[in-house]
Each structure stands twice: as structure tokens, then as C-alpha cells.
Length: 233
Image (cartoon, rainbow, N blue to C red):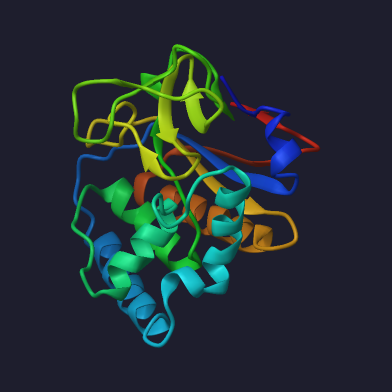
């Protein structure tokens, strides 16, 4: 399978890069106390980081808000995933336990203040893309059962015509969500060359190390960008 960024995307986001981990043979059925503790610690640290600054005004978030505007997505109406997560934390609302893999991704995402996704590879029948939506693409909102059509020319994560994340990094689908039975998972970390790609690489490397430690899984890592727009695994 390939994970591909459509070349047209770089016409608008020329310095977009995505650090990638593909993990296979994960056992996500057990609650791991060390992961829960890590998540709680990183939440407390992030609360302190945003004591005196609004999340949307943070240097960590500005590049994503700017990118949303370039994509004609209103960042006030549709907050990117990391802005929404950090805003929740800044209001001291905490985070619920979901499952060990999701808790781990959230812990690393909060630490590095980067948008990090997790998608079940076994739910995909075709290659995984970041591309502009087409007629016939559908999306099932998280927690829902009914699909909705997606407007054309919206940047999405998608496999075949099954949209996995709308408005680039706004909201993931019910399809491909990580549950206790998920064992083969791809983790994309969206960033920008020259702005925060170094942190994306650090986050990727830390997450891959922790996945190996806690789940003893098979891992492949990489980075895709305008010069190398796909990874095969």
C-alpha cells in the first residue's frame, strides 16, 4: 500500500511535509498504565504552557491557521485538530481515556503540539491519499452512521472515495478510527518544511520508539513532501 500526497496540493501548500509511521501487529486490547501517566503529565505541562496565551495565537498553531486560510477553510469555524485539542486542555477539560494507542498518540501530539492522526490500515482497500475531494467522495462523521457527501475541491485524507479526514486535519471519520481490535495502523504527522518539520521528525521518532516499547510491533517510518510525495509499506 502507498500513502501519497497529490502533487496539486503543493501548488497551495508548497512546504507541506508529513512524517509517517506504519505500524503492524499491534495488540491494542490492554490498558497500559505508563501511557495513561504519560498522557496526564503532558496534559498538565500543556495547561501551564497556555496559562497566559490563547492557543490560536501560539506560534505552534499559526502555520496551520495560515494554511487553512490558503485552503479557503475558516480556521475559526473549523479548528485544526491540534488547535482543538490544545484549546480543550487550556480550559482544563482534560482528556478521556480512549484506548492505549489513541492515548499514546494524544500524549505525543500534546507534547510536541503537532496534529497527529491514526488510521486503521485494515479498513482501507486502496492507497491512502491527501488530495482534493472529487464528486462521489463520502464521509461518515465520527460517532455517526449516516454518510454525507463532501464538496468538491476540499483537501481531505481519503482511501478510494471514503474520506477519512475532512478539511485536511479538521475531523476524522468513523471509518478507520482506532479501536481495541485495530492492529495495523498508519500515523501521519502534518508539518511544514522550515517551520516545524524538525519537531515532526522528533515526534515521529519518539512515537515509533514508544510503539516498539509498549506494543512490540513492526514499524516503518518515513517523510513525504513535494520532492518525494509517497511512501510504500
